[in-house]
Length: 111
Length: 113
Image 1: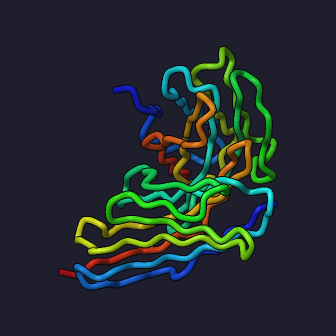
Image 2: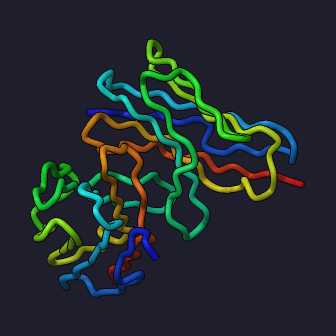
């Protein structure tokens, strides 16, 4: 089955700096890679996703890149703000949509 | 509210009791997923439905767990003879219309004492 590894487990950045979270996956059949943000006690919220036929996608301050050959994908957050503080999860799935999540990255943005 | 809803939001039960959770997906979403999340971990897949058909069950889902989606709309997840290790957040998500995007409900937090 699919195995997703996520690094780092914690990330502390100064407000205004960039944050990068990296994930690797094992199943070459995976073709969908979403990123979720989860605040304490809240539901995971989809913030950006990418399909395997695309190498990069950007939405305002967040971007995701995918390297299918190396089986890794990354989340980039620019100009970080205190409200970006949360746990971020990467995930991978095949066409059936069963998501395999990484272990999460706790992002702390300090003013 | 047209999002995914779950009921109850919190459940405290004694070991050995049975519990049942409900998930109402976004209207017309034909796929519904159940995940379990323990503290400090990412959600783990449990099972999913396409319409009323249960298409896959994780090895995590022991015989004490059963899920249904009788009319292809809401779904229930039942845990029989609960154990302390069942304590977790149970999340439901739905998707449809050929989209891959899964939208999560608020979850049901189960505490087994």
